[in-house]
Image (cartoon, helix red, strand yellow):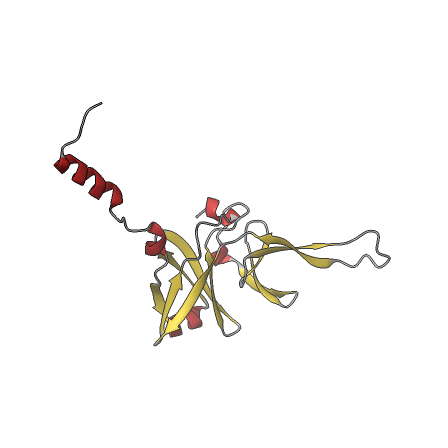
Length: 159
């Protein structure tokens, strides 16, 4: 067994105990994406936030941010139409018409229960599939902060 000199031991201990910057901290900082008035006027904007392409929507007097590519097949959500579905604003993916809530990223679909006498279609949730991000406005500037990337969402595949 080889012995280490005091200098080698100190170097080894110091290197292994060094605090390295956390990637999580890096991606949790807000990034400027544009002027509030410009985004309100255009109602959407794409931006790169920490190497991730996001789309920012302004709809119904609220800002929303999501991963730009649809969780299903990577469709460009920035080209989709916004519709209110079941009382929730949703982006409709232009590729396959998937409906995604702007607020939570839930995928929505209509289904019927054939055992019910009326068999009326009802909106159901597929669960959260699309990653959403936090939008803040400060002094007319719009910022996006990425959500916690440790929890996997299906849209991460295309991000």
